[in-house]
Length: 104
Image (cartoon, rainbow, N blue to C red; front, top):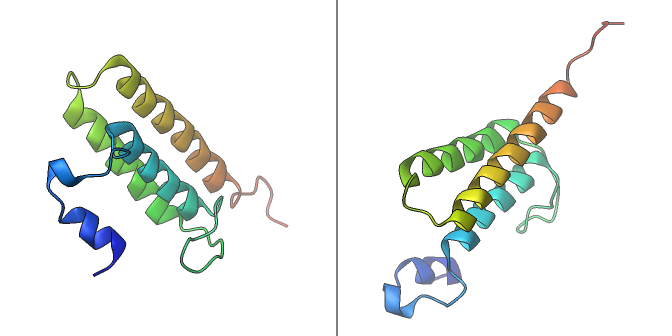
């Protein structure tokens, strides 16, 4: 069984100390960065943009924000808000690169 699969099967008491809401949200943002091609894929070592997958990660973070409203402390709420803003701006930037004002 792989490292990540075994972590998923642990009880709350067995979870490593570093697994916090903030760490989870950051892992989603890091996955989005991989899909934008900003970071290398940890498995292949290559960068290959996948804007559909990056958009899905943004949607997941937005859903998480909506479902946790009122249940996060101020720092957690600010982290989610800031990450969503930055990822949305990055998405707009990435999708504009393929658009031309004038087609040659």
